Length: 202
Image (tube, one colour):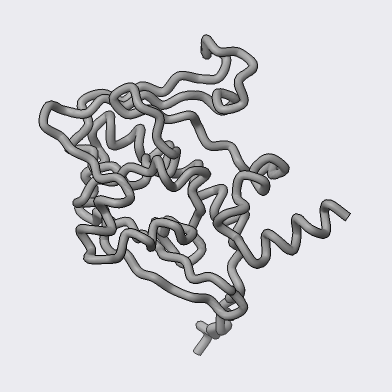
């Protein structure tokens, strides 16, 4: 009976029920993340401008001090910002994009690549954003949803600025989110291209 009620809740309130989902979800393998000593949601790593980062240290689970803590099960990422660097929180992001503060109560989805590369944060209230890394903020209502949600889309850097050590670390961490997203959101369609056989004999 409890599973049925949980399933109904997940359908109608997808953002609000994510903590319950993650507690029973083997796909959730996100690290514990701190920026300047403050915990942030792990998806903040997708929205950080590496130009603002002074240091980034990845601590593997076996080296964690707090053994047994659930939030340390998949390692820790400790980020220190450069002097003067400022990140936005959710209310500040909404204000920047001239959206009402009440929008923060809606479920947030972070889009960071192809159409399937979308994830909900575990705690959207502690998301942190680099202004330069946000391409758009859009409120959307999908068919069958009672509540709208708003999506924050990551700006892609196609000039390949990930050659620095910090950039390469961020890329490696982002692959974890990409892997999770593509398992959660399998493509709706698959395409197989045929190849015409060419007769080279004349």
